[in-house]
Image (tube, rainbow, N blue to C red; front, top):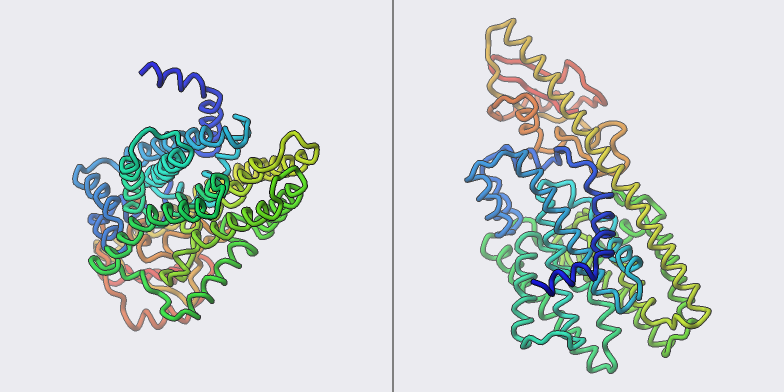
Length: 492
């Protein structure tokens, strides 16, 4: 216990700065907010079945089942998850910062670099779900697995090899059982260290094989479980090699060069250019092997890209969300670690690549803070829009029931010709979908906001045809058709 206290005191600057950055970005606003999935997770029984059989995540399903069985209030779960998310992410940043100290030689730079790697722009997608704490736990577990692996390579571990393997596998098994692509972070975090700690080609190959095995066993088992035993229908979207490569290249281009959700067009490319300049100037900053330095940087970059887009390279998805390629956002940080370690800080030229990396890191840090704020603000506004829409429907139901004496107990849903996924003005970050635009949230959102239960009925074919020919861009009374105890609602 005494050693632990000494350790905390020794790294109190790292702990304080890590907590400050996490709270600054994610701790200020902890009010309840709804993603489209949240409506069903909190207010629909049997969500754990969906998580298990449609997503293939057994541990996450078990956690949902426990919460549902204990009937814990949704608000308590949400705030507890937010609090634990802050704790888990803070400890992940602290652990990784300590891991970086021998390579960056600065506590402050280590923390800021660690934060921009682990809390990169794509992490915001995790924070929009009620299970955000589970996602942050995944990040922490991958960091722990990475530390155990690195300590084995640097002879800091005094445990037998099999014990380290068990620890790594437990961390990665838990990770992949809650969200499959989260395990990609383990590989990407270790990429620079595989190069740094390989004096010979044989060492490099052995380290790659070790990481591949540690990563591959839980991932392959999770895939087999989802593919053959559950089975998850989302898998196996593309079947031909040409379709797989075409889809992967399209997604890679979209993520890197276009406006990808909360990362605006041009920023990712700008960061890549700054990173490339840091590598180029690093060649002239006293590196021992210039060609080896360039090859190492290219290896880390290529490794990050391949691992991060592995889901698409295996043909198992044709759509991309930031959370699916979270590890791709680590690219700038992991290459920066390598550059900072390899350059000779005693050479005058080393000031240039180091300055470029500091500029890049601060740039991403500031962009994250502003961008995360935009996403949270937009999400709250979108929730208010959903609430307003539900209240209009509730008011019309009250008026109809008072006039006719009928009681509306069934809601049927339709779509006009072109349903708006985002409410007007709430599409800047593309992460705040309208609850009414998604089949899994439109009914639950109305029940939540009206605090009233309805049966979801089957649509009428004639009304379905009629509504499909309309194309509204705002609410209209014509979108509501009352018939006895049923209300037909057309989503515009």
